[in-house]
Image (cartoon, rainbow, N blue to C red; front, side):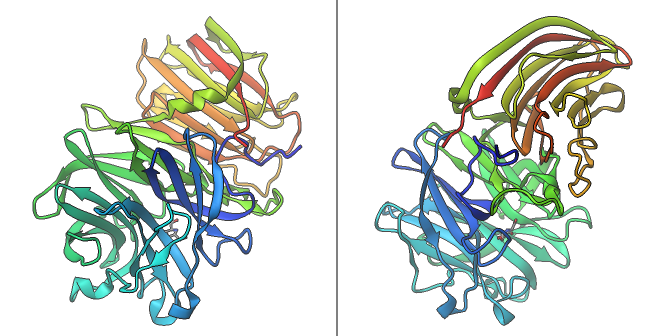
Length: 465
Ligand code: DQQ
C-alpha cells in the first residue's frame, strides 16, 4: 500500500511536476499542461507536460508538449498559457529561460508556439521572442515571467509577472494578432515590501469586475477591482486564494470553460515533505479544480468543481449532534475521502472541528479547527506525522464566526494531501505525511463550549486512474 501517492488528484506517472500551465477548454475537452522535469523528481530541465480530460475528473496523459530548445539557448520552458487564435489555431505563450544573459533574473523572453495537430505537437514561432525586455524601454524589469493571455473586445491582452524597483508587479501588453505586442503599462505593483516578486499573474473578468490573482513567492493573493482605460488596475478588495503558500498551494492558473465557469488549479507543492523520503520517484500534485465566482462584497467564492461528485461511494450521513467538550469518533475511515459538515456555533467561546488521518491511539492526527474567539481557521499539522523530518506547522486564515452562525466545511483527503474549503470562501490546502497505516480515523470535537453538528456527509472517493 502506498501511503502517500494521491489517487484522485492529477499528477504525472512519475518525476517532477510544478505549476499548472495553459489550461484550456478545446473541442469539448479540458487540456492541462504543467511544468515538468522528465529527467528526475527534483526541479530541473523544465518541459511542459500535457494531459486532457472529458469530464474534468479523469485524465489521459499525452506526449510532452514543449521541450527546451537547447540549440537556441533555451534551458527551460517556464510557465504560461494557451489560447486559440483568431484563425482557430491553438497557441501557447511561455517564458523561455537560458543561462548567462538569458538567466531568469535578467534575461527572460516570452515565446510563442502553435499546433496544427490538435495540440499533440507544437512548433515554436520563428519570430521568437514575441515580447522581450526591450519592450519596456528604460524600465528595469527583473524576474519577468509567466504570460497570461486573453481577448477583450477586439484586442488581445497579456499580463506578465515580474519585479520593478524590488517590488513585485504585473505588466500588461496588447496585440491585435498575437505576434506583435506593445507594452501598455505597469498594471499594478505590490503594496507591501515583502512581495519582492509577483509570479503567475492571472487577470480575468468576473461579473462586472476584474480579478487579478498573483503568487508573491508566498501565500497566493487576489484583488478584485477595475481595469482602467490606461491599463492600470484599481483594487477594491484584497483576499487570499489559499492560506498555505509554499506548504501546499502555489502558482495557480485558470480558464473559462464551455459553460462560462472560471476554473482554477494550483500546484500542491511537496515542500512539506522536508527531508522525509516519500514515494517512488514522484513529486508534485495539482489541486482539485476549483470554480471561482464573485460575490457582491467583492470576495471570491471558491468551490470544488461539482463534477468531482462522480467519485463518491460508501456514503455515511449523520445529523443533529451536540458536541460539548468531547470527541466523537465516526465509523468512516480512510485516506481518500470527501467530507461535508455543517456546524452551528452555540457558544462563542467554543473551538471545534474535525480530526482526520487519526491513528487508533491518536499519535498521529491532522486537525481542522475553528476558533471563533480568535477569528481563526487552522489546519494544525503538529501531530500530522510522527516523522520530525516533515513540516508540521499550523496554517491559519482569518475567519469571523458569530454565535448562531453556521460554518460549512468541505474537505478532501487524498493520502498525503488535504484541501479544506470553509464557507466556500477560505481555503487551506496542504501536504501531510502520516507514517502509520492505521492513521485513517475521523473524529469531531468541540472544546470550551458547545457546538451543534447540523449535518455531516462522508464519502470514500474512487481513484481517477
Ligand atoms: N515556476 C515556474 C516559473 C514560475 C514559478 C518555473 C512559480 O515560471 O514563476 O518552474 O512556481
